[in-house]
Each structure stands twice: as structure tokens, then as C-alpha cells.
Image (cartoon, rainbow, N blue to C red):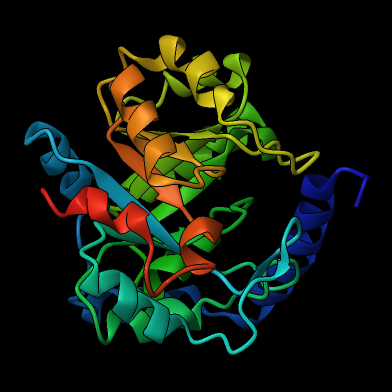
Length: 266
């Protein structure tokens, strides 16, 4: 897809959200949230690791992506979560976008029934309605992609998530976005090494943007494009970043992946 894939995803997401808003009762979501006792503080778990000088891995669960196509044919998110849990990952990132990543919010609920791990609802948040919806399925954190929303909408989403006591990852890909992200004092900031408009990854994006963000009080995360244990450790050694969101590199080798070994000393 040479055209702007981010715009295509958001266009489809708007259609889905418009339909859901017409068919979902917000009061019913509040009741589900009130009854759910499975919520875990996503940010606090990562922050605790940073305080103890430990590396954190946010391990991603997804069936497909626009860049890779279908990654796992016999996709079982609960089984993948079990492997991640056995390897002592810090948190999970679960893709719930339906059309381009073949995800579903129900995957979060099914995983939460089995494992006590904080879960990021990895989706394209473009409406405040999505926040209680995600929380009603058990999500502990949401993602705000600055490249995909206006400044005003980013602020609205951020405030709504805090109201629902959810952690927020504000995702950036450029220096300009990074400067804006500093306004979100209580957020984690994710540096996405993947350009969502072209889908190309460049791990140097983290190095290029890090200096803008290194005084942020919350955790910084390097996301996407980390293929090996050595790349992860290199990023860790050359920056103060101790948290890494990794998807395809883990999913393509779940049984014997050296990246998990960075957690053994934790």
C-alpha cells in the first residue's frame, strides 16, 4: 500500500466507531467496568522496573499487520499470552483493530481471564467513546498516536483515559511530535521506529528523538523494528530507555527467542 495507510485505517475506524456508538449503551459499559476487578496499573509496573534498573518488555499479540500481512495462521492470542507470561514479560500489547490487523477487543478479555498482566489496548483511538469501551473489555492502557489525531483530540483522549484511571502511551515518530508529547506529563511516551505513513522502520528514530524526551518524567518506550537482543541492549546502553515494545520479532520465533533472555536477570 503506497498510499497513506494511517489515513486508510482511521477512515475505516471512524465507520466502525460510528456504528458502535449507535448500538452500545454507555451505562452498560460503566456497569461492566464497575464489576471488573482485573485492572492492573500498566505505568506503575513499568515504572517499578525502571526504579530497580530492570528492563521491561511490552510483548505484542497480533495476527497480522499491513506491513507483514498474516503473521500467524493458527492465531490463538491466549496461547501466545501464555508463552509471554512464561517468559516473564512485563506487559502485553494486544492489537484490537479489526480490518488491517485482524484484531478484536474480546482477545483482551480472554487473556485477562487467564493471566495477571497489564494490557495495552493497541488500536487507533480517535473518539473518547473508545476509552470506556476498551476498559470494559479489561484494558489497562490506551494508545494515542499523535500522527493520527489533532492536538485538541489528543488532549481530550488523554484526559478521558485519566478519568477512567487508565495509563496512556503517547506515540511519536518525529521530533515535532516528541515536543508535543512532553505536554502529557503523566503519560508514557512511545517512540515508534515505524513510519505509519510508509510502514518503513528505522531504529535510528529512537536515537534521533531521544534527546528531546530524555527529561520526561514518565517512562520512555522504544517501539517496533527491534529484531535482536543485541539491538535492544544497544538501545538500552546508548539511551536511558529501559522499556521496549516488540511484536513481529517475538511472534515469528516464540519457542526459542533470545530477546526473552534480557528479562532473566530481572
